[in-house]
Length: 304
Image 1 (cartoon, one colour):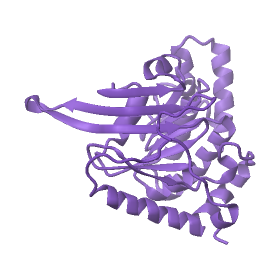
Image 2 (cartoon, one colour):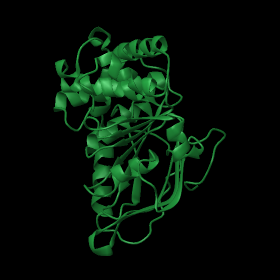
Image 3 (cartoon, helix red, strand yellow):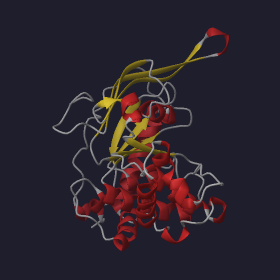
Image 4 (spheres, one colour):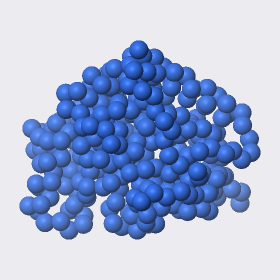
């Protein structure tokens, strides 16, 4: 199977032969991406990992229609990237929360709806629901500067969900957080994705983060960025497509259980080795990026 395969439901993201070249000083060019093929299924969590400058963020921006590919096809939910952007089919979150200090927390969450002319009562109701979802209902009237870094990121995630997108694009959203807050936010994200059934394309430099969050970890080479391997992640089963929903209190325990399992450490090692191999590979590669491979059994995930 290749990245061009289809199922009865449109892929959340489908990339076929995507290249991206930027103009350089002196009339030259810098090739950021080459021959990228990837299919992200509905409800699937896929992380992009690779060395700095390999094109992870560029690829995310191409999917978001913030950059135009030099060659290839980009589909989001079966639509062109531009149409998906116009239709608000995805939400996006970056490393910096990007909240507006002159707006309250609730007003920041409402902003995408305000921009698109949604009535005030509907905006307020949606913001209230989302702040409850991320555990910040009591902070709706606060200003961003009154919140911790982790709380600000939760507001940013709530804002990215305002339009009920089927896809979240996330560029190192926890990169600026301390380790303990980062781990809590990882569990929080899985709970939110579990409840909304959104697919996620997630950029990170952290191998453990990619493994614990993802159904699949996509490994990219140094520039020009291309996919060199796809490794099965260890996303807790209750948060995977088709799995039973977790009770909110169970997600932290499930994530902690994954982090302590032998299968988790094996996957971390596999990703690390793939990154090392990818840094020495040149020329075209054939990698199955169309669908998740068979995941390990629950017993192996628990290390028993």
